[in-house]
Length: 306
Image (cartoon, rainbow, N blue to C red):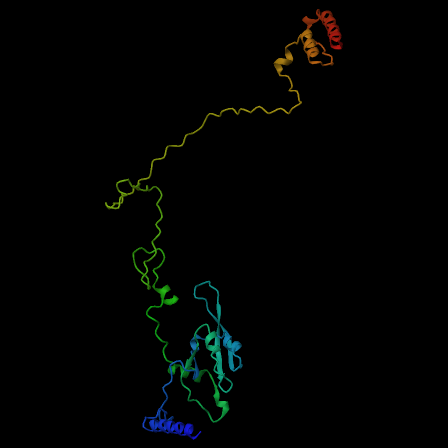
């Protein structure tokens, strides 16, 4: 057992002897200022011009240590006859660092970058009530906020930079954007009356360069309008007759007498049992034929009955 303790004691003394010869890494604060990383959470700084009193930071704070007061003021219209607008004016913005737990939620939810982290941490007070920093003192911390780190050279440009470098819509030219991509082709509308050149078979080959043909801008002659003075009569199409209906006779058929004998024979051939009456003429010259017509009607009655 003694053999195991002695080697371990010797190794411990050897390690202590090595550390005695090395330089110490302890920073003698406050004589030596510590080297803190640039994104250290020391104190929260305020940019008053960016604050719109949206109350997001105060609502999201888990400790309820942010106090905001504001009022609205009316702005005159910028154009004659325009409508007046209102805006929020910040009256008070205070953070109680005696309650703050330095979670950084208020900085993350701020939509207008009004709050920033500062690495300064030397703001200890004798009275705890002095840890309530108003907007004037919070604004003074902005001088200690480090600039944001540079972007990666291989990363894409921010949306604001890309939108500012993009050429306006409808502008011609081969300018390139911020990312080096070519600009969008300009859309050209065809003018009325212009003809589009048709490429020939020889010009479509890739070996020979094509030359655009000049488009004709001369408007084409239009024929004069034809005046129609003669009105053509409208021709009505014959209407289709429904099945089972008999068309009325025409005027020519009504005036022409139908022989009684032929009508009776046709009715008998069709098996019709109806009687066919003779046509009575109203003319005075047909008065002598009245007896002959009566005898003919009797014969038709006999034929119809048969």
